Amino acid sequence: MRFRSPVPAEDLAAFYFGKASQGGYAVTYRRGDDVWQIEGRKGGARLLVRGRPSFLGHQEIDLVTGGADPPAA
Image (tube, rainbow, N blue to C red):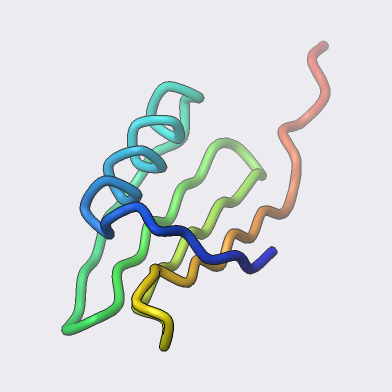
């Protein structure tokens, strides 16, 4: 999913990092010149959140999930 947000990059990164951590994901954070990225893993589930400035002055966010946790026994 791709969307734009007026929220500052630092606040968005902190929000998604915190939510993924609270959800039990092993989370990593990387930042380049204008792009930041959060990756998370939990069992077979994956999470990717990438943000960058948009031409409107907002942050453009890509949010991707995939995989699944194995079923509980």
